[in-house]
Every structure is written in structure tokens, then in C-alpha cells.
Image 1: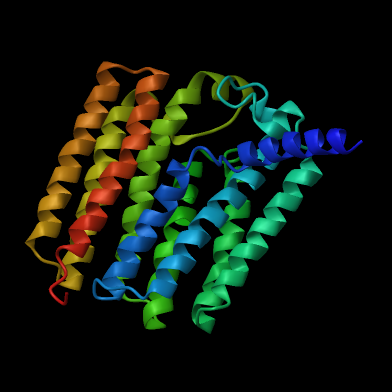
Image 2: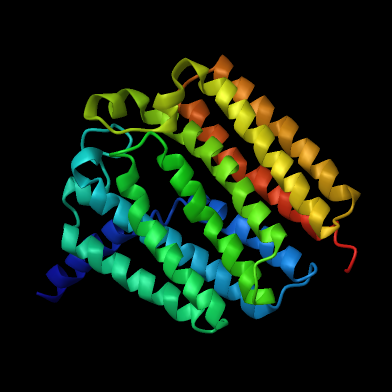
Length: 294
């Protein structure tokens, strides 16, 4: 009996790890990066270790919770999409109730971390949880779920600034807006992998909305992203290295768009999507090495 219980536990553990994409942490990186941009700017380049731990662990927990609620919402869609048909809820390895329990546990764990921050940040965190719940349902009614994802992924930047300064500065707002452009760009690339299946099942996305103009839209989104980040750096008084990095990021991003246009396959789209983790990391280093107060 113990052997059967252990086998069942192992099956469920694997299913939960697949639910929260434990082996695929690029999503966590993309949630964390704008948070760190804001945290380092707000802290003058040297954030408190407490903030680094809280927001890093919080990014993992909230991204994992977002994956859980996304799979609950999409359980009847995922089984018809090649890329998602083996997800645990769609495949029946986890029930909707089990996935919901995972979401609740992860959300409570994330909220418990926020309780170590100021009251302003605690209030802002409730909006973050609401955004994580709302996002998966947007694709049913709007072609712009990628924009909502950008709002959700960028909310950590707002919270990080509030945690350090107990207020919202213009830099935090600009980073938040920049992230909306950035997330819309890279998630449009991600959505391009599923366009054929999404059209069949009636799921909406910016990739479908932009259609044959998708590559022009991506160029515009990346330019807007870099332009707004330039303004954030200017307001914060960052040094030359930051702007040099931004130019490199823009060049790399436009090169990736061209690469995808020349080779519009699922594999290329995925590589371009993941490459945003690298360019986002470059911006973080640009911020750190541009702080005049270090």
C-alpha cells in the first residue's frame, strides 16, 4: 500500500511541477526583470537583501500561481492546441480542484511575503493577484490579452518602488508602461506559435489581430519599449552605460524580429521569445553600472 501511495505522490508531484512550469523558468525571469529594474533604481543601485529575497521568491510564486489559474481557465482549449495538449489539467493528470488548490496555496504564500513590506505595497499586491486571475480570461473577449499580461508582469515594478520609497515615482510608472510594450512584443511572438490552433478554437491574440502586419507591429513595440525605458533612465539620472545598453537591446530586438520574419517557424518564435530574458538582463546590468550613487 505504501508503494502505491508513493507512486501516486510521485505522479501528482510531477503533474504539479508541470502545472507551474518548474523546468521552464523563463516566465519567472520575465516577471522578475522589470521588478528588479525598478528595485535597483529606487534603491540607488544597492537594494536591501530583504527586498531582493521577497521580490525574487514572490516572482516565482506569482508566476507559478498564474500558470495554475491559466491552465484551469484554458483546460478545454489546451487539449486542442499542439503545444499545450499535454498540460496536466488538459490531460487529466490534475483535476480542476487540485489545480485551484495549488493556485490558492501559491497565492497565499506570495501574499505572506508581502506582509513583511509597508502597508502601501500590501494594498498594491491585491491588484497583482487580481491581474493574475483576470488575464487568462481576456483572450476570450479581446485580441489584446498580451497587453493585460504586460500590466500583470509589470505590476511588480510598481510594488518594488512602493516597497522602497513608500510612494510611486515617475520612474516606476515609466518602467511599468515600458514593460507593457515589451511584454506585448515578446508575448505576441509567443502567440505566433499557436496562431493556427487559436483561430480554429476561437482564442484571440495580438498575433492574430496584427496578422500580416505583425512584424511591423513588433518593431514598433520594441522601439516604444526602449524609448520609454530611455525616459525612465533620464528621469532617474542614469549614466551613459545605460543608454548604450538600450541601443544594444534595440538592435538585438530588431535583429530578432528580422530573424523571425526570415524564418517564421515555431522553433524560431520560441527562441526569439526566450532571448528577451537575455536582453532584459542586459538592461538590469545597464542600470546597475549606471548608478551615479554607487
